[in-house]
Length: 61
Image (cartoon, rainbow, N blue to C red; front, side, top):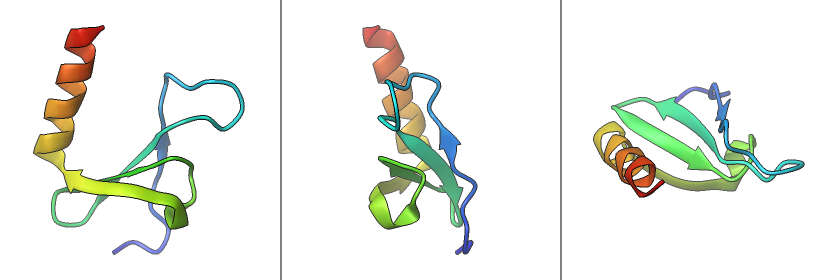
C-alpha cells in the first residue's frame, strides 16, 4: 500500500473542509475518506462498486 495515497478532492465540496476525498488503492480498490488524512478512512470498495455508486448518484441528480 502506498505510504501517502494521492487523494483527490471532490468537485462538489461545501465550505471549508466538508469534502469527500477519493484515492485509488492497490488491487483495484478505491479509498473514500471524509478528509485528506488517510487516518480518517471511511471505507474502501472496488472500482466497479464505486463506479456503480457514482452512476446512481448522477442519475438521481
